[in-house]
Image (cartoon, rainbow, N blue to C red; front, top):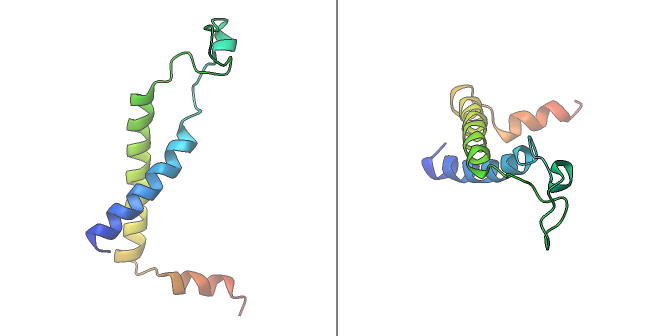
Amino acid sequence: MRPFTIVAVYFVVWWIVIFLVLPFGIRTQEEAGEVTLGTSASAPVRPRLIRVAIATTIVSAIIVFGFWVAADIYGVTLESVAHLFDGK
């Protein structure tokens, strides 16, 4: 894969993974019993966005590395994967 393709895939994977990682370990204001006036009770007490960004970056790098290994080293293409689902 070309470098631009790898960066584009990483960008898309990063955004998908962040929405998967974001809810882990979050305590809401309602659960903590500290609802701030003017905010939703479901708002997080401490969002820990730096920790989420670091975890997302690491998980995304592993996933993209797996894509790169499959495509460049093992020669997996969309056509070769499509033949698995043809049923022929």
